[in-house]
Length: 385
Image 1 (cartoon, rainbow, N blue to C red):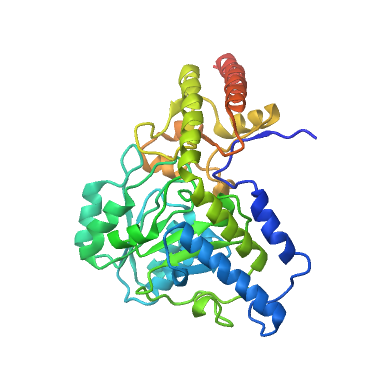
Image 2: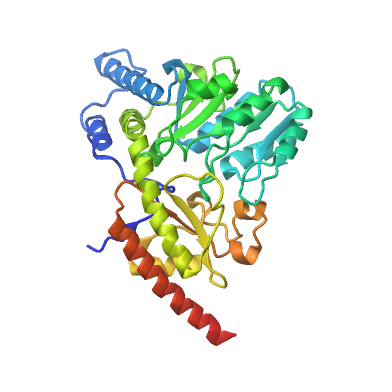
């Protein structure tokens, strides 16, 4: 069976064999509900507790700081809405390049009397220091700035931003879904700097879809957004997805254990990719900013990104034209718009996000296919002018 080269790891990752092996018994035979009092339930509870310990250890957290959710979107919503519900309505600040699952719940708080400040970013996608300082002077109640952007791969200095916010009294949250497994991640160090909550997701690190976590400082008061039987310390009701949580724990261990070597190898592949992109004439976004070692976001003049992605798919390469969670939106990337990229260029954006299964041969094949595909599309464009 034909299988395209997979170059879309920021959207989701293949399930790691060890994670699959860990979850299979819980899909066939081990059927207990982790809230049940009998042996089946006790075994399920033990498995969830062990997975919680593994996730916590992988990121330097305490197990009691780990709340399991169904995904990164739920975890982000739980913090933003849950923390807001425990505070008087005030000012919430989020960066303009956040994932929609941060931007939209923050905007929804306006219906409850909150004011929203969307932090501007510079041409490289980094939070503008003057705008941030002006926001802090207004003493916001909540702040959320992602650690690494899912489209551009740009890494924010979240520790410095959180440290600067300490005097404002704000609860500071960071979406670390894209950073985990690609960069070293230490919640204890970030917490000491002033980060109160962090979001992780299993399927970005070789785990299954359907499991994620919100790491949260126990001093932060959250109101649950899903009411029910009082699971996850009463903060997220619902029967635990034991199989996915168990696999998440294994994937988190693997992600943390090999992060330095993985990052070095991915950076070498990305450098080779971007050398080829430069020769072909691509514009690489945020090229001068600190970025994830696996992510390259680029465009070609007068070539539509969706068209290019479709052509490359037929050539045997799976890439993305933007964020997978927003693929139904035909508008240019809100991230690129916030960076000041012209709409006609932003519509051409294509993202390559490398993973452990990729190698130099695949990168070379991709560059060759891209060169040929871009040449054909540019030829067609010239004919219609």
